[in-house]
Image (tube, rainbow, N blue to C red; front, side, top):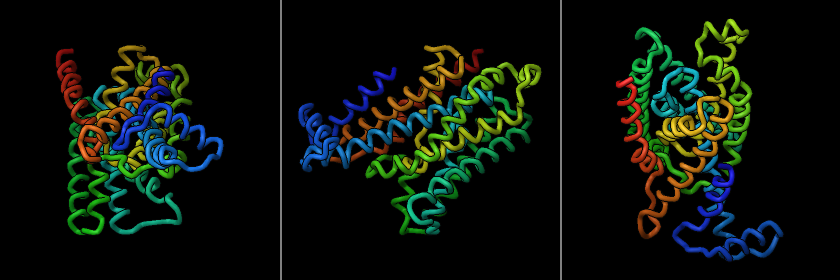
Length: 323
């Protein structure tokens, strides 16, 4: 799987409005690493394509791993940052920051605001589910729909009241990597790396929690502390993804299911392969988004993932009703 991920990153460099041959890409990469003079191919690879390719891969990894954590922690196959409204919370907070001009020196403000929005939305979903009678599959999904709808209305209100930020806010709603590059990779890494480390560090406890809270307590797991740590880790991953890409749905839903079918339910390998699979899926979704139209026009990548993910979502719901 790791080899497939590396191959996908390399092959994705070929796709774009300006065609490049394998020789031109090899020459551009070699010239870049050895400090050679700028060429047209080197500028395209270095300044346009490679940063975007890496960013889409890392974003897909973050969404897939956070989806796997939410599914395991909540014991709900329909849970992921999108269906639970957590992506909408991060995007709503980011849109509010853009509209009100909340900035700190550098690019560090947006991830912090997105992280706050993600945790606020997570709290709202869990609180609504508890009020409805518990964290059942139906309650969580319905609560996620309610929260997403409410936050979507707030985003629409912000957009209508602040015309100067409309284009940036639309970006968050639809999800896109257009104009993104290495600076955005640097923006998400301080949240992606600790979030991933936190989740992987509690992979064994996640396996035990799948047996139920009572069994976990009996074998010495501090259930409350582990749940909080996993929620923080998954929230950081969601915020890291949303702050650079906007709302991209279904990656966190589809990939963990496919990996679980192929690799089994053990959390550590499932999380690692979800990271690789999510990266590859979103990478090729972005390639499709920027090449399927003519004359350099792009589709929002969130549209592409929804076209593939929505039927899969329906399949999971149908299987859930039969079981």
